[in-house]
Length: 141
Image 1: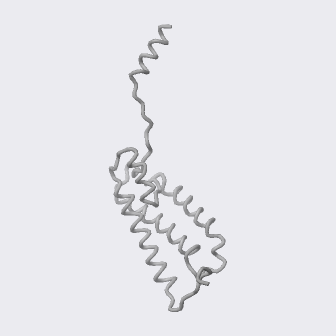
Image 2: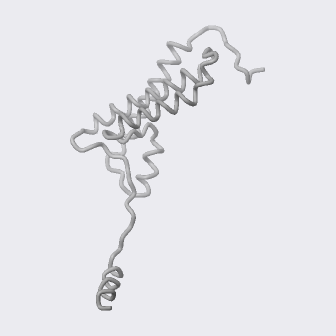
Image 3: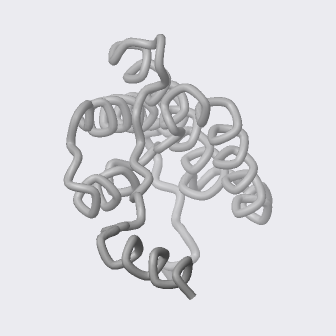
């Protein structure tokens, strides 16, 4: 009985709160490496979205868009997860940072995806989608 009282007394004074996992760059890597990793994986994701879902000239390739996008998201997480967390989306990192109240190094997850997504959009839009004639989408009819 004494042991039970000791355990109860100990537990009354413990304040345990669950840890909120946040993204952070792996130990041994700098913030610049994290930004470069986020640029690369976000570029790959946005490029895949443009190539399979957004390009009006894609033809029947659009039918595999969900599979291709899902595969690139999974591959990006597997490749970048151990190094930068594989965020690819500022909102994906912002929510846990707010919940944990820890914004240290959080700029990496804004700068990287914004640069990577912007570059992919500019490159795909200007190189592959640049045509003088308008290709009507199914929703244009």
